Image (cartoon, rainbow, N blue to C red; front, side, top):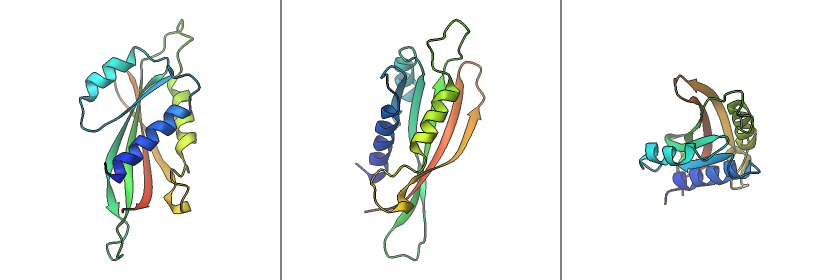
Length: 145
């Protein structure tokens, strides 16, 4: 397994651990699977939403360095059904977003160098008529190898 997908798995574990009830959120790491069927299996079973983590590539910090040091990018997509008034047991998307972003911003999976911390760089809504969707963009600088 690559360092990038290992990091996506670590992000998934971190996000799952931020919620007290396991039925509040379902986390899926995108490894070029059929994400639609994975999503459909989970969206009806959670009180909050489905979180899909995708490694979005990396850029070389400095091609002149001997060691490869990259800034890895991840897209964390948070998807929920709209909440109707009588569904007070559902977790609103703004609560999900706040919990996830606060839990991963400046989180250091390896407890190594402070430059290796995850950084939330943006939170963007995605227009959709059926679901509430936001994408959290996260970056981490790390040495490869």
